[in-house]
Image (cartoon, rainbow, N blue to C red; front, side):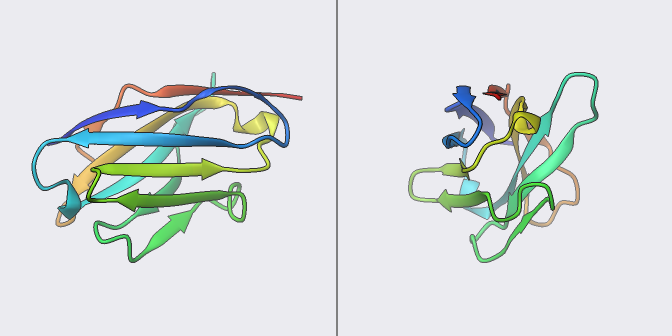
Length: 119
């Protein structure tokens, strides 16, 4: 497993942008797939975006396609989530998660960072 720490959340207005960071410690992070999840009050956790270990492939939830971009810098052991054109419905606690590329399930989770978008 790796240890993950998210940062970059905050309170913004609709239409604003935020960039979340997920810093990892532990060996071989560059061999881990990483995803961002979010959970709003009284809602189930949902996957927002994912990136493979090499950064060669990304995927997004339909609700954020065209607005969010996931990227990674393996030299810095960090994954980013650039969020543009934020909407009130993006309000949630955002978590990053990682798994070795051979695994099916994510086995390392951060503590989460709150994103609040006001209308």
